[in-house]
Image 1 (tube, rainbow, N blue to C red):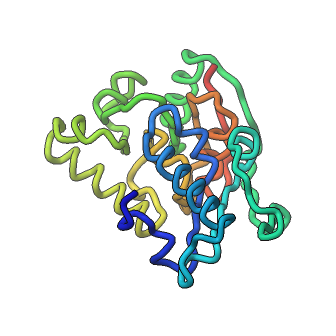
Image 2: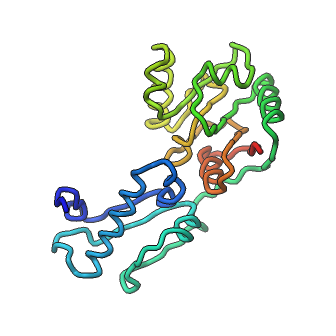
Length: 235
């Protein structure tokens, strides 16, 4: 009921990217319900001709994994004003060369072997891990340079200053250069970085993921734009 929130009256075009997250992130993000409510309200006003003359005339929904949105979100799009564009044949698909399912013990052993051999590794965890916690969990020597990224502000504030600065440097590098800093050998991150970023490093050939949600796995594997050799799914 508050006109200040009617953002369709302030823009010509509104783009909702990663629209699948309205389903896949709905278990722990309240914002997804707000975005879905916004789309529903916009469509109702559009169909009932209640939009202002200068209101948004184009609402664009985008995703690289449309299946969860199509299956679970029931929105009444006006057929005469709706276009669906499938552009998978025109975009760059990043497909791992090998997909390997391993148990947790094997994953840890394999990761230590890769790191000891000079390989670089990305690890998507379901739980927030600090640098020291990751080193302990994977039983790694202190010589391995670990970088972490997560959203938990309280846990960040409790870290030593140098670790906080290291996380900030990694986040800034990903946001501005689409790169993990070159010195990082093991990059441990939560779903914070599962979508919306590109990783242009070409020397990360191995990725481990804890999630079993197919759409999250697809999004995570696609972050490394050069493609990865081995995607390990931890059972």
